[in-house]
Amino acid sequence: MDYQELGKKLKDILKLEREPVALKWVSREPRDIPREEEKSRFCTKLNKALNGETFYSTVEEEECMGGLRYTGMKDPSNFPKNMQSGSFLVPGGVYKNIPAVQRSWKNNLAIDPGIFVAILFAPLTRAEFEPDVIFIVGNATQGMELLHANAYDSGSHGLGADSGPICSSMAAVPYLTGKVTYGFGDIGSRNNMKLKTEEIMVSLPATDLERVVLNLEEMKTKTFFR
Image (cartoon, rainbow, N blue to C red):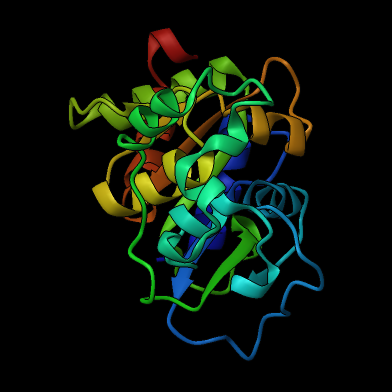
């Protein structure tokens, strides 16, 4: 499958302003991709790839607890107690109290720690690896068309995400469930990525990419999508 060509078609059909991002979890560090040079948050890494950068990241380059926990880079039992409880989120106004944090976290899927050592990030149009997940930022109309394209031949509905961190909802969830996911991002990702007010997010399991692109092409010949 030519993922670079599919990325170009996806970007052209939807008229995306920024690059779709290819993500891949690997059990050994690659030799042909540069390692990220500094620590950053998972959502910031996505933003770098949206803007054209290609790199890989390990536990050493991840500075966010959510990025470490939900992408499987670190066992959460090794976090400080305030991070295990979620109490650090209360003063900032993300949750009212620790029980609310704990209840919310029960719904956040995470990749098991200890399996992978790095995550690859690249614009899909230039990715020289077979991705696991495709992450897309666009406006509401572009997101709607992606969801229609997913349902076009399958009748399948995507999984909607709300206030959960995107390292779970837009990365771990499509990876673990094989389902298209969509949402508005959480407060941390929207602030760190400096998203426009109208921008939303959609993630596709890479195994669905060709089908979705072909469906988009066909849909554009139909009355409602011309």
